[in-house]
Image (cartoon, rainbow, N blue to C red; front, side, top):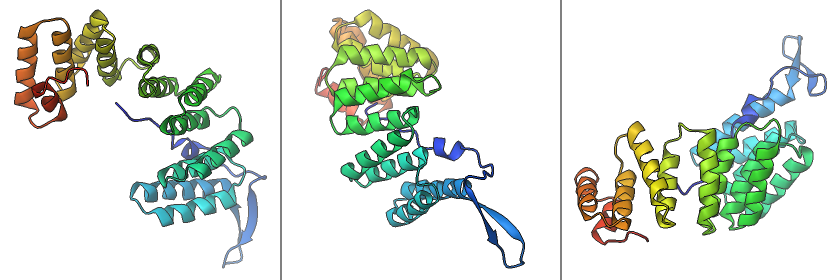
Length: 260
């Protein structure tokens, strides 16, 4: 679970209603007056840009983002997506510049703090990232609390602060109990810090709601080894080899790398 979640599509959910502050009047070829909705046009450009980014068409993505920014130069969501673009092309200086611009326009935008936290964590700036995630969580109208706690947990693990990673991971699970992969994440951490009963509960909960995976069987192997249960190590190891040959987990099991 070593990846961070970014909020990309909030900008696409903004109202497309015509506003007197964002529209201008143009003449079409038939002589009829139509209104140009700059806000809606910016949303369309953002959608296109994200599709182009997904398909690795970087130039086309940039062209559409430039248009979106031209239409809505002071929109926090447009600025946030522009920051994400710069992350994707590894221009970290520009990415940070646009995150700061977005927060300057709208300092209460939880989505921007969330994404900025993911960016900071990727730069190894763990304390700043944690602060950004917690700022998002504390905002009254912010709804992606589980995702921010999950990102804070992943970031804490990257910072080698496993107790804090468990703390945030448990909060993420409480806000989104249907995210069964969080149980695997917590099981791995709990085994490492020798909280074996908590790890067992995590694995049983995962097992109740999902078929075995390479990772779940590997964590059972690790837990069994930590508890000195050789029969259980062999049992789950055999399942792992049979169901998921060639996976990194099998290689770890064969090489007895239980804590690498």
